[in-house]
Length: 280
Ligand code: NAP
Image: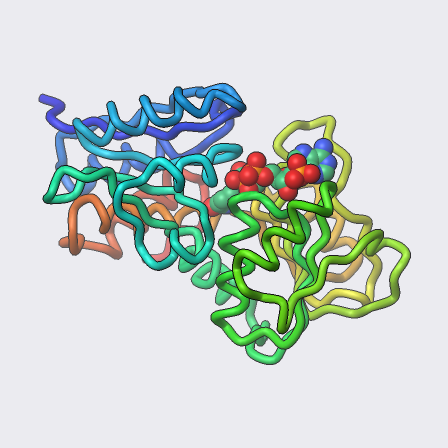
């Protein structure tokens, strides 16, 4: 019998692999819990608060596009990562009954970036595309990994300016415009926009060989995304968001249940459900 309920809030959410991955983890751990996607429309901040409260009372949950920054504001207790980024992707009720939250995207991003063999973030140069909740996690992660320079480009430049100032990154990060007309070179380019979620979306940035060594798309898809395929065709080593999704999900499970009895087995079960590589 189901005795705890978890869920994902976002808009859109129908594309998300999270419900299937978490259900696979619960089955592997023999935890009687459910996980459902909840569409909360963009702009419905009160709906975000209500859904977080309702889910936290019976288990907990995750937050995705476009609600991570709103979710952070509704919390009673925040981890350092939430304080630092102003974004929350994982929440629960703590022992004092407070709505508590974390940002597991920060560590999830770094764990996935480690899959890019040869990428050296320490001392490297990064072009970050986007300035929403996920971009904040990527910026914080890159800063903690010691990047030398980070250029931030976003459709709404003001939001990129806020990201740089609110995360205290003015020493290493600059807001740029029109990177397609620049000849700057970067070790890593990251798509942290929601471009790629819809089949009709344009590419976040057209890529040329030589300007970028690695590309990381936070969006994921079967066999990668349009943008990772475009990057690979230009000779740029690329990765989509699946590994990050998995890594941040394992950290979320640890927030809800404490140390996992068979972490490797959980990772394998989730990868298998997501269609990723399974190593024995
Ligand atoms: P968000 O807070 O809503 O931010 C959306 C970002 O996308 C903003 O920078 C926004 O620019 C930009 N954007 C949206 N539509 C655009 C368009 N038509 N043209 C150019 N830019 C556009 O969302 P989020 O939480 O940061 O999530 C961003 C993406 O990362 C989503 O696709 C999400 O699924 C993905 N993600 C993946 C993982 C993972 O584990 N793989 C984790 C976190 C997030 P404006 O500021 O100008 O609106």
